[in-house]
Length: 398
Image 1 (tube, rainbow, N blue to C red):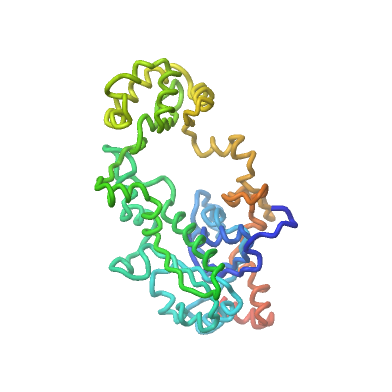
Image 2 (cartoon, helix red, strand yellow):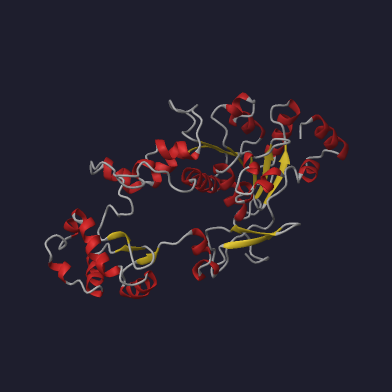
């Protein structure tokens, strides 16, 4: 965004008590939209993600890559919520906050004496967002949950891969990310309520199930048992991944007109009248034989040729790229998805907001914070003197 453009969440203060991914990702999305986000972290250790990631040297100094990915643009204070003075300081922070995000197991904040009802007494307009694996009630409520656990119990793994490889985990933390984005959506909706103030119960499992709309509805309404179809589209054929002379491509000829254009461009007009492929249902039934027929032509030329020729015919085609490959494409580099954030030692490249607002894309305005980097400023703003801050630090409260 330009310096003069006003972001939609400017003036909103968010307390981020969460760890690792779902909660921090949620708070990161709010920060990108202009919210002031204050991470409230455990003294000495902080967010566990500070020790995670592919670079051990960064993890050793509490700035792991897993932390860097979704904590830019935030402030960091340290606070021991188990100590009486720590509880008091959090309550004081809550009085001037609009939102609090936590992803502890259900009941943890209540046991600390810092649950929703307690904090609402300090600030009736507080939006309290609790993100958990399964929700705040139900028989699974107290089970520990990480992304892999949720992918398994939500049915994602059962439909990922094919008959020989399923169940298979999606290759990134899908449940954490979908749960975090769901929470961000819920918070922005709650900010628009009048009067403000509510408890948001975000279940990562339910968020994932909601995102599996067609799979779930085919079962609930159509009575169809979900299957692991690999790279095939359950609703149409030919629609999936196909071999070429060099690398795989995805083709999604989901409409009859697209199928006809594809067959004719490949010189396989004979398939259009073949009884095994003449109708949508026939093509779905015989999808694997149809793929083999099409690959007799597709494998004679490289992927780039087919992408360049078929898309102008309104046949959706795309190469199967690696993450490094797609990040280097003109489509991504030309739309400013990757932002550069300066630190004292280096320039970090991080994802900006997935949303463009007009012609601008919200991006991180500051680097991910060191643990407790904003203690003096935030606690000072609450009226604590430098001596009091030093005493609290010496006692391990902050």
